[in-house]
Length: 332
Image (cartoon, rainbow, N blue to C red; front, side, top):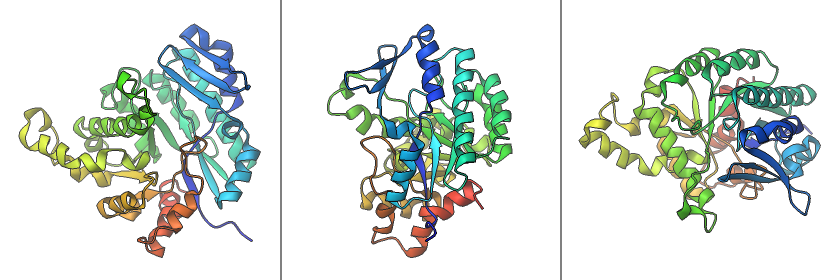
């Protein structure tokens, strides 16, 4: 029986080639690969950011495909996750991107009907990012570009990124964002660094894209926000109020809430009620299925989250499961 047309647009992948580069060369940039007593690996960036445990589902494509079959998923759109590549110097940053992008393309060539990917770029050096963008745009299986919600100390509205945005838009590649942890002492307990930090990091990035003029400067640039837009939907009224009364917010031609339909979103809400709020706000045509695989917080049944949503019509479910992503990622 043919696999139903479904795609998970928010999943993470660590190729061994990427991990080996960190293990062999990361130390010169303050980043190390460590292993605990169980054999699990972690990436330690300075004193603030620790990624892991990097378990086998992040790495093993056969294990991933078996889990996709269990979940009823036709396709994964592979992407990197923290710590990304911005902590590295220019030389290592580019090599990390090349290693990841080539691995994703190789995975697609081996499993063309099951795996595609979002390329990472060394945005810490926009000139190098442009060079790698030109290269990866020709690689089989690359269907989008992946970017964190900040690059070192630069917000996404930084003008140094504008040439890269322009070329991404010209190539018709959507830009998918992912939070970088907000490291704050008040978030260290109760997993709040993820539960609260990630959704607020997303709204910070989206606000810089809106107020910083990126969405107006590049009307054809498609930007996808993770975790159902984070806190952006619920804070739209507050952002509009700033636009109404604060001079420093009157830098865009219309209220921030009117930009919400410029973005696309995934389904990671952990609440059907919140998902339906998002559907009513931006339309089902701007929402794609996501799970956050392979993290422990991920949906274990991302397809069922959509098909079991009683308030969605069959047409809306079909859009979210496949149609919207197929159109945006040019899957045919």
